[in-house]
Amino acid sequence: MQQHPGVCWRCRLGIFHICAVSFLPECRYVAVDLAGHGRSSHSPPGVFYSLPAHVLDVHRVADALQLKKFSIIGHSMGADIAGMVSALYPEMVDALVLLDAYGFLPTDSKEISKVMRRGMDELLQFEKNTEEKKRVYTYEKAVERLSAANPTLSEQSVHILLERGLVRVEGAGFVFSRDLRVNFKDIVRVSLEQSLEMQSRIQASVLAVQAEEGYNKIFSEPAQKVFASTLLQCLRDRNHRVVTVPGDHCIHLNNPEIVAPFVSDFLRTHVLSSSTSLKHNL
Image (cartoon, rainbow, N blue to C red; front, side, top):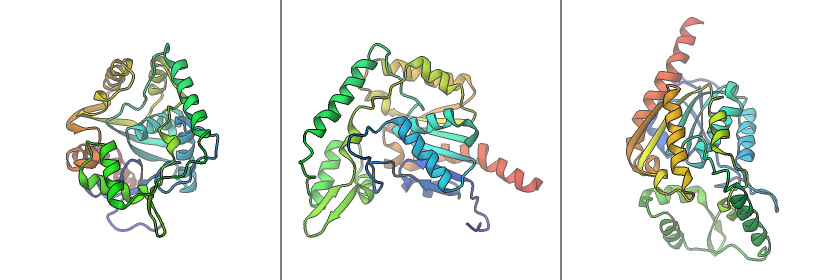
């Protein structure tokens, strides 16, 4: 790929919604549709979606693009994937941005077996209904459904998500492109102790942007709120930056102008400045 004057081609591998990029510094941004999402293929029948599987896919993307070093911007589950990538392959990631997430989402050790069984039961039940066809919607009805399922999304955000979230059915309407199995419980779980050990392996500079009315308000497991505080404090103790902004879980999508200044400053300080220095020294 040829470089254009004034543009840094240091790669940002974004496991998030690419619409916010217009607010960020000029770089090469790669937005990933995870398996089972957007326009990516679905996993084969009988296969679970899990965090480690997504980590493998990120590595495959990096290999395909011949990226030896890159930064990752991730939101929610994408940030948890980014955290695990950064812990397992610390030599590959130079900067990590976590948007309303903590890099890891621990489960109480006493609850792991229950959560694993629930995920397995969900898949087993799903497999018994393999004849069920995807429901076809008009575009307006698809908007209504996504809005009802995610009431904090703005109208513009809904339309942005549906750009890659719908597939047209000729002469009939639209179906959602996602694999329904992505909503099942992930059966691969880690404890708080394991999460902190992996967090300690991250060599990248880290920025964690938390929303006041975000993830911390919607935890399905009570212990996770306590775990989140511990994970964020450990990031602070390791001299990483943690900031809180007004907004909800999808603040980066609904109001990217609120989040972008923090991310832009972080990238310029921890990544782009070192890239410029390297160019000057060559």
